[in-house]
Image (cartoon, helix red, strand yellow):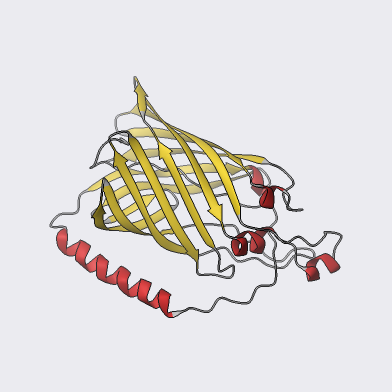
Length: 271
């Protein structure tokens, strides 16, 4: 694994925040516009081209299992399958999955999606919130100075909002331990933040929580991913993250804090 190699995958341990309680406005279901039909057709076309260009599809990366803990989810610990690999044009980066298409600079233009679990069932006087279905474009650039990643998503589910995240990362090793310090920002549109963190008039009327109309939010974070070779091809990956919440999220009645911590630990086999 290296953030300075063109032919080796890069682990981006990036589990997103899961709110302890999620709420928002009573938004209507999103209508699927022709743009999304075009996006799907483009995805299928580029997939066919990518497959045709791959005479062989070598597999490289990590597969295993781990646990994840998040302060915004009631300090709840969850088990999850860990997958960070490249297989021809296909790739997995823990919670982000995609298909690499056209080469761009030191990387590729990717069609990406992400597994997010920010939804919650109806509880007390809060309406049910449906987890997002983000689909969009991204790129991972492995430059001579380190890694740069940028992803842009649109939620095809109820919020109808947009998400953009980017990070820069470096790599250094000490004996059998490799460190990947990361610095990044995640932007969420008003529609997205308000759906999960806002309080509608109806919810406020039926509870003691005041109405809250959230705006777009830019949250900054630092990560330290540590990969330890424990024997042979077995590795232990530990990722710790601190996120500083922007005021639209920090001031939500459902959060009321300015920073949160999260982490994951996974045992995996490396090919």
